[in-house]
Image (cartoon, rainbow, N blue to C red):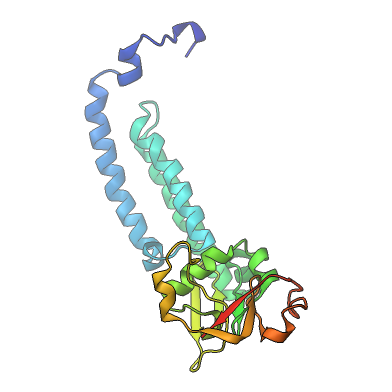
Length: 230
């Protein structure tokens, strides 16, 4: 479209575009046909597409969105081209999945690996930073599992799919509270017991006797301490 053909007062073009009114009926047919075919493609992609997506599955989803849009709306694009492109995406996804299944190195490259975020109530700071996960995100996931004290967490894994796997200790250790600060919700803190003789590092959650509060954290070297809870 040429520059001199664009006018802000041309509401007919802005609302309806350059296509004739009959094209709206064609869009109805195109959308229905592509929608039904997309359901078939999704069925062949497998149940994983309905759950937490891996990197390759997310790539297929984004590719599919780019494929179906022109086939549904562009009058100069045929449906057959979109269908062929979706079949290609299906084949690529199946081949890469099979390749990763037969080769662990390829699977590791395509799917990623599991990261350990918490070990025995202590945040693995480097792992948290390397996976670009904030403490608030970690604490949110812990609270969703009713873990209100880092000392309750034996292990917290960040799966390759992006999900958090949380394994609790049978007996909680003194640790850093995962609850919001007192200023946010003071009442909820009544469910925890604040320890008089122990403090926790605000950065990694490492607990030490209160007598060592003047020293840096032995794990992360931070000097920011908070009350340990149980």
